[in-house]
Image (cartoon, rainbow, N blue to C red; front, side, top):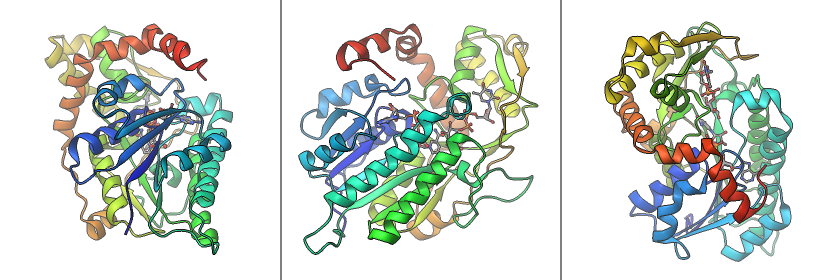
Length: 363
Ligand code: NAD
Ligand code: DAU
């Protein structure tokens, strides 16, 4: 029986991590434990996303620890201080474009950081006879990008061969292999999930959906890479996180699970849908926004199509999506229209100055 009492969430100030913490503390009465949020607050981490929860649960069921997952001494100390029995590892450099122009941080955090956490967990959970406790769990959050790029048909399953194409996905693939290696070699209890493109509130506005929503509102150019015909499979962030929570409870140790939206969209078609939706909600002229669509140079090595076969988690663990794309997009657009101060804080540099004053220089 897994403990799930003292959960170390890495990257909990990022997009998916902060939504995961919200889900557990606000919507999961079955969760009665404590969350320790370890985050380095890089450019993508925003602790303001959890300010209300820190006020409500801080000190008892929610603690924030500022630090780097690559810092072994710091990570060891956290395991001890909080009696960590579960790790949910979201922390990563996550933006493909940045990995192309500056791969080193991606390898440090995504590969070395994951290695550091795995080894610290092995050490903390080792028993007197050398075996590892069986009431603990290391859950690793990964991506469909490790499988590479699909042609016009087919979908990635858990047994699809790995074929990463960007420094980001190559680092994530390496981390997946390390997680499996720690399970097979040392008996570390692990689970792993590979998810498709997430969307929803609190996503850093460099990713496609929030970038386009904000640019439509502001009348800025809408940059479409290449011919705009690349396909992504979109899943609402809360559905992804419910999948993770389901795996923590009932996932089989040593297994990996794909999570996806079964919801494929060409980028250009998605952009037209967003233009209609945002224009309607914000009282703008959609034709004017369409006129700002700008086809730009393609991303090098741009994966053509992703699609996830998530029948395993549905069949074996009973997970299902709750949020349809129309509903999820409407919620997301509403959130960005209503939370301009969250976006302004990032864009104006005000949030960055606050982090530097309180936590020292940011990476
Ligand atoms: P994000 O970039 O929004 O957040 C990443 C978080 O990790 C930030 O808070 C950042 O400060 C923190 N972080 C980065 N380096 C760190 C370090 N060295 N030490 C401690 N904290 C550090 O990313 P996201 O979109 O929320 O993605 C979270 C995870 O989910 C990643 O592992 C990513 O690969 C995976 N994933 C993302 C998607 C997606 O569509 N966004 C889909 C599938 C899987
Ligand atoms: O598939 C899961 C992955 O989804 C995660 O592992 C990554 O962390 C996450 O960033 C995301 O990667 P993508 O590269 O698919 O997401 P992004 O939002 O950067 O781009 C989505 C698609 O839109 C992609 O085909 C590139 C295109 N694009 C993106 C941007 C930012 C544009 O055409 N214009 C843009 O300005």
